[in-house]
Amino acid sequence: MSKISGSFAFRQFELVQGRDAWKVGTDSVLLGCWCRIDEAANALDMGAGSGILSIMLAQRDENLEIDAIEMSEEAVDVARINIKRSRWADRLKIIHGDIMNPNLLHSARYDLIVCNPPYYPSGLVSSEETRKSARQGEGFSLMDVPHLASILLKGNGRLNVVIPAQAAYPFIEKANQNGLFAHRNLAIRHSEEAPLSLVLIELSDRIVKPEHRTLVLYNNQNPTQEYRSLCESFMLF
Image 1 (cartoon, rainbow, N blue to C red):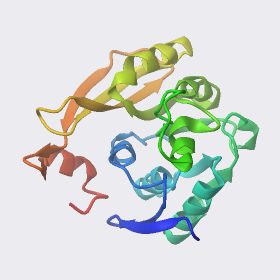
Image 2: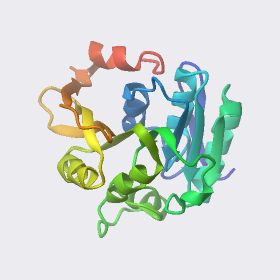
Image 3: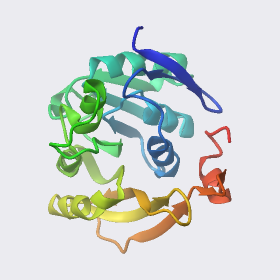
């Protein structure tokens, strides 16, 4: 396929990457390692891109059934290759379509939703059309995620997202308006001196006192022990 650009090796699988947008990033890797998957029989990867989150979930739980929905035809082509090459293809279903049309999904409700959503606010132009589609969202935006999740989650189901740190408060406010409340969040710094860059958030329909933690990724350009411990099942440090 002409849009393939190299590959990225994990411990138990390898991903081909899209030439433009759908490349392996720290954000998806962190979310795939951090999200809790206990007591989940099925999961939805909302805006699946290359399929990285779906494949990570499948590695973590040998019984989990996963739907991965993606509207970009190019990204779906990449995801299909990655899923087919993995050892868990029988439990991974890639769906080409718009998440704004939930009738496309195989399951009516999910125990777990994971999402690395479009980041850029509307009006911020990125340099390449494909990257613009992936990050600005042709079918849904960052602030659409809470509403969609409130429809697609089972009772006590969990939404897990990774978003820019500056978007965390408005995102949580929007989630609260849709009946979803933060249970855990993990703030990410590249180094001790660096500002917060990402926040990973777990939400559900239950109101609890949320757990707040911070993870520093590097110390003197070396991965910290906390980062290694979180991602050791996947990453080749």
